[in-house]
Image 1 (tube, rainbow, N blue to C red):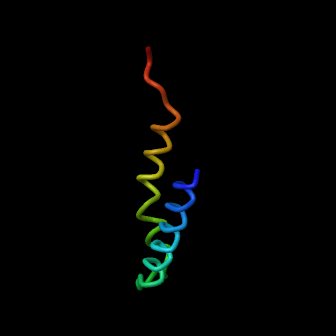
Image 2 (image 1 turned 180 degrees about the horizontal axis):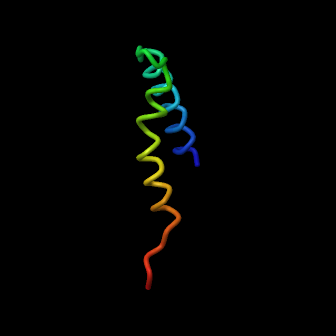
Amino acid sequence: MLVARFSDGISDVVMGVTGDRTKSKYGKFRPWILWTAIPLGLILSLLFTSPDG
């Protein structure tokens, strides 16, 4: 549990810095939301499906 908390804290800071440095015509964070929507959808669909067997 402690490792998960530390990794979450580090990844939050890294993504915050990355998002703040992003400059596009769509804003700071919208490109990251759009770029990660499809992989997140695929990962979640794989998470909640099970193989027939």
